[in-house]
Image (cartoon, rainbow, N blue to C red; front, side, top):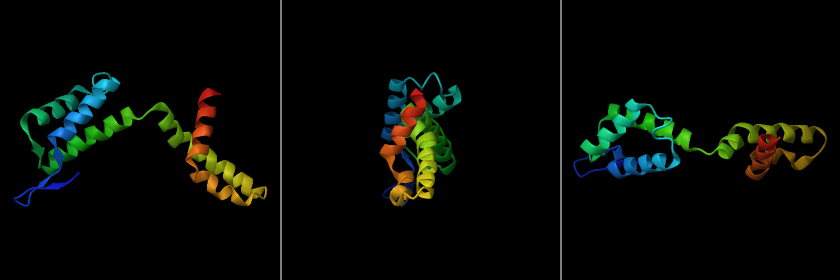
Amino acid sequence: MLKASGKSRFNFLDKTQLVKIKLKAIRAGVWFRALPRIDRVLVDLTIRVAGSVRSVSLANCILSVIRKLEGLLESRVSRAIREIGFSLACKLGVLAQKWGHEGAWAWGADRDFAQYLAIMKLNG
């Protein structure tokens, strides 16, 4: 994400990156519904005024908004896999190891197994 310019300054964020994330958020319906007005105005003004963000403080503010958007754009299933599936897979792996299953140590890192457990939890 960091790009060096000719005068040895660093451009933290590019205008095209901000436009892309804004369009993605609008298409997903989270731009107006879930993002506070002050955050929307900050991104809009940065897109209009600056070709790239060089200020560290402005970049921190913009990155904070981008982190919010990434959290809002994450699907329900992806969030469930991350929050529920992997912890259940680890617990089941530990239990299976106690019962003598030698390969169960890898269950906690198996994304497919975590996805299965998360979807079962969501549907149950």
